[in-house]
Picture 1: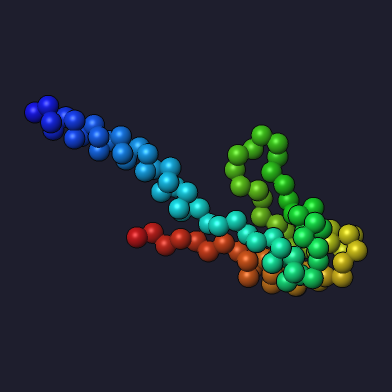
Picture 2: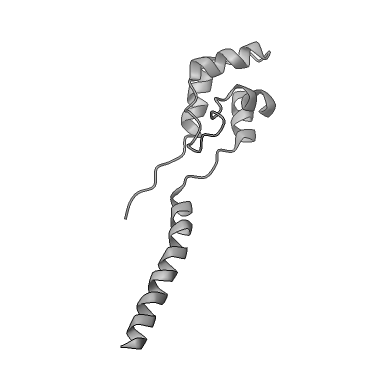
Length: 101
């Protein structure tokens, strides 16, 4: 009886450590901003500066970029990029949703 309790406790403890790792595996990879900037023909610094930011203290993911606002910001920064090109690039680099098994 004591051995069964030990085995159950060990299994429960192991599952607690496995949960954070499993949650991280479900997260999509971070976008490659250097490749995105290259596809838009803008600098990575300009792209990062124009992407929407999280509010300070917020732990959720940053807001999705609006292609019109992003294109306008990049134009202000001196790049000749169209909203269509920005939209196309954002779509190409959009994280893929994981399929549940």
